Amino acid sequence: PARCFPPPPFPTMNVAPECPKRIAPEQVLEQGWVMKQSKHMQQWRQRLLVLTDTHLLTFTEEAKGEIKTRRATEKIRLGFGVQVKALRTDKEHLFVVFFCNAHGENRCLKMQAPSDKARDQWVHRINRTKIPTRVRISTAEQTIY
Image (cartoon, rainbow, N blue to C red; front, side, top):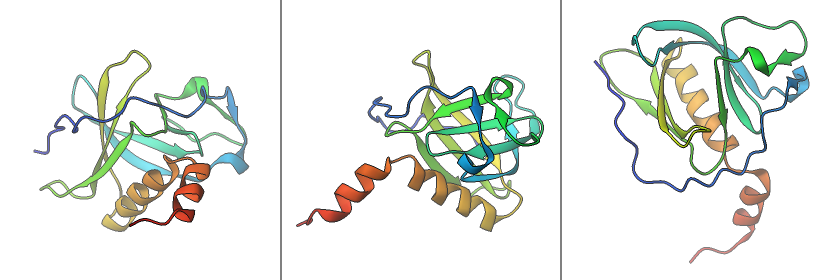
């Protein structure tokens, strides 16, 4: 079985603001159903994964209209300390999200997408979103030797 291994050292700087109380539908960049492994019992549970420009959240049910973040089972602030990787194991379509939570603890969320294509899209989209637009733009404009 796939196991979460500690990520390599990474900066704990997190540039995203606190999670808003509500998220309007137009603020959602991506959402879809995945299976998420529970922290203590290691059981797989279905969760709605929601990506905004500042957070990655999981929910037990889909919201109609505006999303209330107090109902989220996980709230991950996106920033430079977040790492997302596809896992190639005997269990298909896995990816992991490494992050430092609000209490300063390193966490690893293991998720299973419905297909390899969906997994790769999640990994790409989260990795692209976790770096603020202003950093992507300023870095792209610089000449790299």
